[in-house]
Length: 407
Image (cartoon, rainbow, N blue to C red; front, top):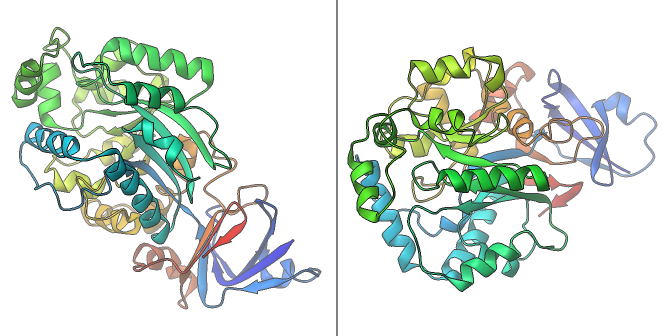
């Protein structure tokens, strides 16, 4: 059993510990506390991490790793449907090898920036069996889209069957992601829900991302409405209710669903979310992608007032310049000054662990939790440690995943 000591230990399970230490037994944390107590009777090796703050590894709650070759390839657009058209055109120009390489590069970038776990939406399932075990905990969510009839593509169909097969020593898990109510039919959502119940799989989806999506469902008009109608999407579900209520009122998502964005909510949506039934809905905000796509202000305060669990993600490099959660925290702090540094850290540790229903095994440095941790240089006062973490820049020098230090 190895012990580690550091200048400051941020467990997210209490106040920071000055001159802290912890022990690791296999893949789990065992003893946590002040170094003088933890090391008093410790006879095995001790690793001194020096003037550093050690904290739980970050969890990216929403990402599209197979788009990681798209950095800088798509210009920002005031029209969401225009951006959708651009990314679809770019996707058609890329090969399976491009997506495979992008996924690997994305994983590497996440790890450099302190992420030890990610919720990844997979649009190219045929590539998953070709990837080595991910270098971080990865929950791969199979993207489901049936916006229009498509020719049978054997590679994609075969990839979907292989998606849930054994993949060696893989940390993480699998899930389902009906893409969004404008690209996935009610039937597709129903199938995803049934599979989720049968196989105990988490579900994530994009909802109410843009004003154009809201106008499409609530008003039966707008650029996205026109764009999808030309593609041949049936539009009979449009013109009566918001995107969120479309899913809830038709029983297309459950209370534990992880929903990305929720940028466009009306008073009736907020009233619904304030009720007891939907308090367990899990929400992911992607600050920099939000800014890139010129969305209106995310209703963070209204959602927090209603007790909803809000996490942070990066989204993809098709709408972001990095996969850096520290940068996302700083962006969120500028837009929402009432958020404390501690709040922001919870949104990349405790809260996404709760979204995965793993709040008793991930997101904290505590006895019995998975030993995922990172170290950040720090020599300041303990009372300033949360802010120092949020302001941290540059590659992470030390990381542990599943009890094993990562070079």
